[in-house]
Image: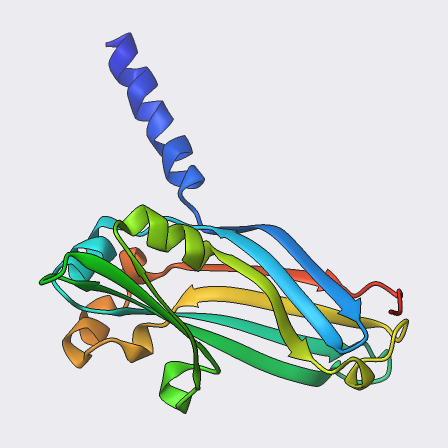
Length: 189
């Protein structure tokens, strides 16, 4: 009975470890612009993984907004950028395909990356890491001017086929999202 109680008490801790989280986040200021690097810890839920294995592609969206702090009014949004990812399993070849586009897939974003992987863990390792994404020109965000960055990485259920969208409403299994907010440093290039 004691072992069963300990196992039951351990379940919430395991569920908390599966919560998506931005574990590394950095915005660097260089001469040509602001570069964002992030590492998101996320695991696919069994429902999402099952849909992938049945050939339904999943769309993920990395969104970044830069705001200028103002004491006299609402903070001013200076920049909004997004990067869309499409993860799909191809049953005939038994390979995974990850496509990335500047802007979301629904916006008709231009593909900038297409990669094939032998396994889901390999594809997820690439999906979780965003490296040196140029989000804005350096001149648009002056150094030392009180700006902060909001970053969000999420499963975009609006891109799923309609039956999945209807089934995803109110289901925690389809709510995969992580976010972070950070003040920009005053360093200049």
